[in-house]
Image (cartoon, rainbow, N blue to C red):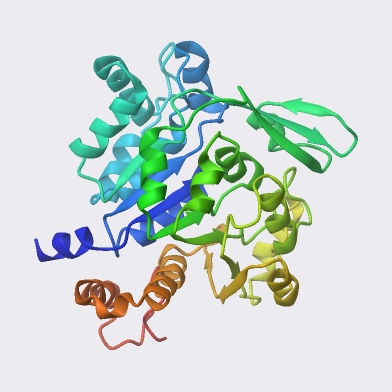
Length: 364
């Protein structure tokens, strides 16, 4: 009970994005606070989500499902249940159980927004998940040769550089709950995730960019650790930030979080290179000249894939929130911060000789 009270007194954080990147960050942040709002993109048009979108005319549910799982207090169990995918059955094959549950709840409650709200409460997750809008949107991209491509699945594998991204309908309205959360936030975090298909689409929804810029919250952009073939080929961190600014405007972020780990297994890098992905490099001075503060850290989670380590990424953001706002003086936040460290140590070796894979706090 004490732990839940501490989490309930934590900072109010809004995380904006989609895809697997958003879930990675949520897993780390939920250890510090339960006042989290995940604002999720609704442009997905592939897989089970795409089929549901086409057949039922509702927003895609896959990214929202993943965020609900990531914020769950029993994530291991919820992941097994929500991500169970039917392997046979006419009309069922390829669908995940969580997606179908959200569709069913939408019909029971009368709207997808109410369905997600009810799921948030029933599962008692640490925070809430909100679609950026309750209308499905379609992505359109203009390439450097003036070619226009339509649909998230096409944008994510474009053969030429993306010059401009748009959504259709252009005047789609955000949910009031998303705008209210941004206005009341202590921090707003953009990403991590696919730049053109998970992060920027949210900023194109009417009112979201204005809400973020006008909010008194600290604003972070988490740059990806690897480029994405067909979407951000050969992009540096400066290129990522420039694309973000071009599709919003100055003031959308105060900080950019970048990975400074260089020692990565060659075999793993070679495998990514074969798929057209390389580490995202950055120039600190160039980034600062673009008007942001640079937060550098060892953020890689080296397993079979190269992505952010949930605990280390959350640590970087939370430290900055506490430092900037003087939250160290708020003792309930102070204790919550160190409770996370104690829990991480318990997951590893008490002597400190063995480092927990997801923990940035232990020594080797």
